[in-house]
Image (cartoon, rainbow, N blue to C red):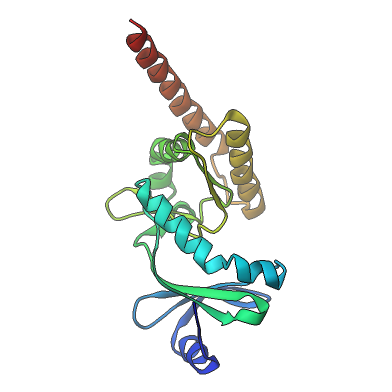
Length: 216
């Protein structure tokens, strides 16, 4: 990966719009050319961060998601901002659409109507062996074609088969924890849980029927 100069980074920050930041500085910046700059501040030891650059892991995860037919950002370049410290970054084409959290806050009725589809999407992730630890309403986008996509895909593990019950429960617990931290007003957690259980029951019934047909 190339090393971005301080002048180039400063130009991006000066002309772009900071969309996300924390105490360490900007994390996501919308640039004038419609690309997003994503900066991966890391708490890893610099040696490990250099051996496994976060920007490259993010790119690999987005490529693997798209290979499994899950919409994800398209990374155009990865690079170092400070290789000595293991600080990497990338440029990517963002997905169009809005996050489910934005939708809930702006149009609660439309969000509630989408609960079965949202539950189906999450169940499809689990069936596809996708363990997305950062699964929450801010990282799932509703796309213009009514599909769903994932962003902020660094914390991702891909399995060869469907997730087992323990990983499913753990993943849903991450989502529940996020909802509790965000304290979204009147969020229908019970309705979401019911929708997910209904999708799971349907999948289990269909799977059992298919297995019985094969055995005949």
